[in-house]
Length: 537
Image (tube, rainbow, N blue to C red; front, side, top):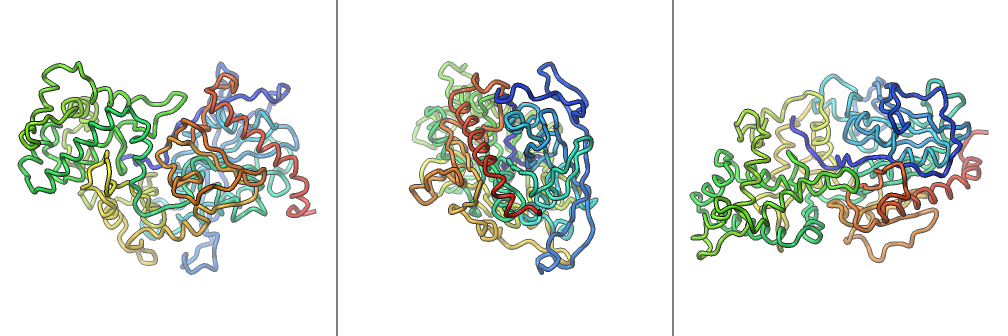
């Protein structure tokens, strides 16, 4: 299946704090190779026998199973000293190896070095190779819920072992500090709230703690912070296209599609999604978008796209396209249309190797049988959770400037749910995502002891996070027990990344990392009091 990106902001990298200069390079390092920077370049896989069903008394998961599955995890003991904490990185909607950078030089490396800790990455159930079943039918996906997922982490913390590392590192006798970004950030928050007697603390980065079925606010940071001549041109092109569609003038609609080389895309919504690809669209990203911009090794595709749309020195063969539909707008050109179409034809269309743009293997979405493929994949798992309890379907705004055509609304994505997940014998998806179950964890009022929220003010998902403009204002004051931090100028969990030198990082990232270290230190200083209440004698 095509790759779907909700929170796969894999903008993860690594950082050194300098807090601990005498951390030994221990002989039992759990890594295959070491790079020029002295950090591991890969890690051997470990397996944990995880329960499929943590809730044998819940009707939601009937009929129940006592079976287990092999859940992958990786760890780094480079900095570990006896008595140190465990830092658990929640893998999220991807494979465990794709998160290794967080152990190598990223946020977990920062914390490991600062506190002589052990770093661990756990792969989420139904992602990577941590699947309970050989396929993902509707019935087999019944155990893919937030409450089952976070129960995995609590169970793992209580029973995990780490080959060649001496001592018992299980919770609650050892402090376990979780970290997650995006959906994994929300899972971190849920874990600390639901299992706070086992898991000592957590940092939830860019964590969507409140959801709605549709989410048009995804585009707000782009409208506000992107080059404004680019934003203006795109939004006017979208307005013009929407007006043509609303008029029923199919000939002009088809002429517009032809300018992009996409007249074969029969569904207007598929076409609208595809041409929004360089900005960000409801699901299928063929190129990097605003979300993939990063402070370290971030993608530049979005700005290259905008440069094309705003190029005032483009050759006449491109600028004359701006006038191709001017008769529809009283002779006024569609400024930037030529550059827009040129970029899509040069950079996006070649990503369909067979040239059949209307097929589901390329840019179409309307083949119902394609969605019904029950093979295990991260895409299928993510779509399922979206359909069942997450929603947050990216859609177009009902009023004001729009970067995504208004032909797209939540029904467009909901139809994928119907096609992908027909009723099973024991399980069926709701008619609309049950976001109330997700929001029941706390929503914008979310709070748990030793849970830190850290967000970026230019993140497309920020209006679902702690620092959302739609959360009750003013937000509660940050405290040691309930800390929070909004990084100026930052995007989607930018605090994950680093350069092995905090002092050389950009100012606001540097200060965010120092804040995270201070926050964890305050928590660890009080661990003995907490342990006396929860850990066995």
